[in-house]
Image (cartoon, rainbow, N blue to C red; front, side, top):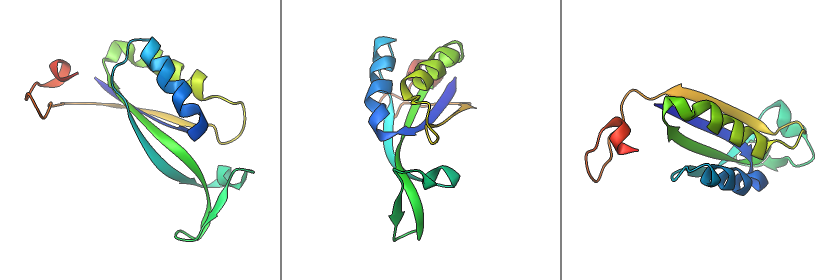
Length: 112
């Protein structure tokens, strides 16, 4: 299994979720994040007093999927998130060694 994390613009999150839903994905997680770094110097960046630097508000979209579905899911998210502007975000993919569903104790693929 794979864990896909995409750090994308807030205004592209719904488009990415819609693309995943149309492809049959039933579960995803969204988290608000603040991105700092070179791309935070664009017009949408704001000064964050707590951190003392410029940040961009973004969304972290997380999906766990089967290995075979990973390339398709990454491409769906990438296309939905792309504005062709600096700061569109990044997508990471990591291996998931084991997953346990809290309610049923189902393990790995059965937990999806």
